[in-house]
Length: 178
Image 1 (cartoon, rainbow, N blue to C red):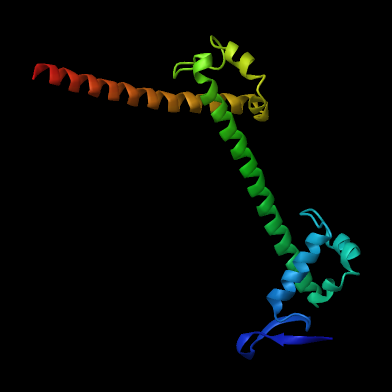
Image 2: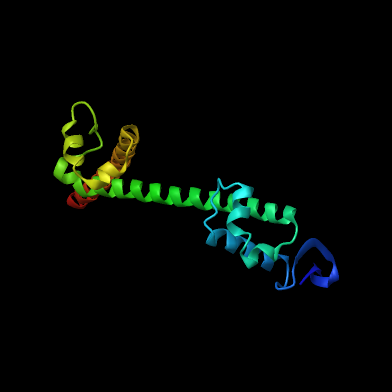
């Protein structure tokens, strides 16, 4: 049984959906859940969606072809966003892991703010290339950029440490004079 359902307050929201659902949003949610259950991807065309899902009872949640296509589009846009976010988070974790590796091995390898990854300090690349966190950053240029970021932050830390030591030394000297 289908009917034109009214939104809150009795106004017509313009969608025709199955009476099985309380409102358009619930019908859209059921339709999108069906798309996910049938493995509909970002690149899936409407005709393929029809072939995969037409026997599913949730296919009738939205009655008009236009509403179904619009819902498919919304689903695919949301899926692109989720995939992009997932990829970004994975890349962020790889970068953080890479930086943690550099920090862990900094003293062992003698990495300072003046260390360069390529050229005179090329042995560092040889040693670190055995670490899975090094290999997780696929692009050589990105590894170089991350290494440069690490040495820049190290430069800032070293400067702060020098300033703190200088301040402590000055305070100790003032105490000696008193």
